Image 1 (tube, rainbow, N blue to C red):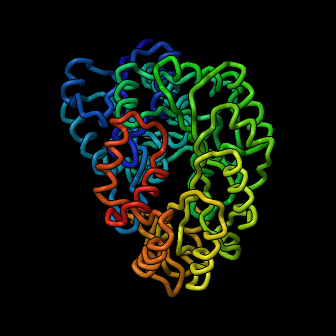
Image 2 (spheres, rainbow, N blue to C red; image 1 turned 180 degrees about the horizontal axis):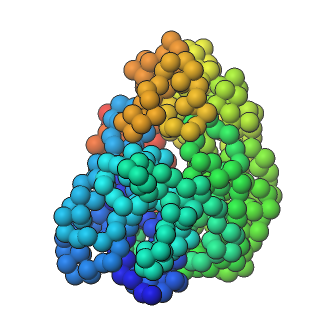
Image 3 (cartoon, rainbow, N blue to C red; image 1 turned 90 degrees about the vertical axis):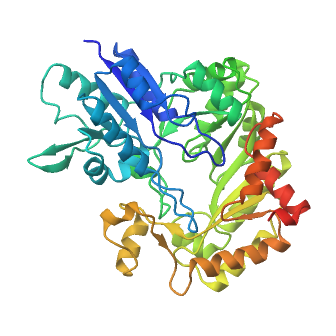
Amino acid sequence: MTSRILLVSTNRCDFPDPVFPLGLSMVDTALRQAGHQTRWLDCQPGTETLDQVLAEFSPDFIGFSLRNIDDVVFRRKETYFGALVELCQAARQKTHCPIILGGSGFSIFPEKLLDLSGADFGIVGEGEGSLVSLIAALESEGDPTQVPGLVFRRNGRVARNPRQAMARDEAAATPHRPARLVEYYLQTSSMLNVQTQRGCAFDCCYCTYPMLEGKRHRRRPPEAIADDFDEMERLGARYAFIVDSVFNSSPVHVSETCEAIIRRGVKMTWGCFLRPQGLDAEQMGVMRRAGLTHIEFGSDSFCDPVLAAYGKRFTFDDICHASELADANNMAYCHFLVCGGPGETPETLHATFENSRRLPGGVVLALAGMRVYPGTPLFDEARRQGNCPEEADLMEPHFYFAPGLSGEQISDEMKRFSVTSPNWIVDEPNEKYYAFARKLRRRGVVGPLWSYLATIQRLLPALG
């Protein structure tokens, strides 16, 4: 049976750039392969309203995707789930068709969001197979309550089914990217995105990736990834970002993926998240040949005791080595830091400052405080210390700070240090940076802008 399904991306966050809704595109592909008719409403461009699309398309089902709960910035604490609730309520006033929620943000707080929004169903984790199964059950008036990852109401209470990871072959399809949306994202952010694998086997204390995608890395076939790169280039993209938790989950994945891209003759450049451990000249070389130009290292700290407390399983020596490899290959790179988490003290923070001077270059993007999400080791640690509200209340951003430290203290210390180390970008840039970023995009600059922001901060301190 063929149904009309409206897919709505609720994300309106546009810093540092508007992000193409890749997860929604993967769900769209699965629905189309199952024979359904789909239409997108992307709230980011703001060119269509929900009322307009409902009137024109008259869907049988509506799927709302929530990408992020909040901005994870201590000083702002901006949340995004309010827009989801408002859209669901508006849809309910216009139609009686089933409303289904999904996305990574929804998957962190599924029961609470289903309750707040009044939606009929939700899907936790990977949505492709589960959404197709749910719609098939609803079309046939069967029992949908056995669908993996389903969130639903039973006897007046919200229930949740266990998730089921997708098989490798199921994730091989190239995502559907509507031409009109591709044009918008290339104009505003200069880039598209791609996923080469799912899951994360690492143990960072704050991270939700293992909860959302599982603890096992599940690779897409290298040729399917090369197909994806080839299609993005044909659509006009000059740059892509790999959204994996870390691209270098294994040397085999790096080499086979990059060799497939090289064989395909793709000229587009790209960036990715890398773990600063286990890298060598051979891996860096093949990534460079395949088009890698920007690296974002999830370093989190430059102090070994803090790295151990964060569950990182690498050392500052590893970070130095990875930075030297990137520098030797003329790659732009940055290190993300989260200052103030478990194990942090004034002394370890000072050690991070001083150790950063030992790096050969690169940009440091530093945030104060560690956002607490339920289900993470950090949540358990914060509860043990009496430093965390009840799980349901965590939708409003709560940040962990090690005993004896505060967000204001850490942020002020980082800003003082950045005066003498302008490659440090602390907290969130101000409006002058936003204006500068928009100007760079209009001039055709592609890729991440953190290297430009660091340069401007060095040359024009008044912008800081």
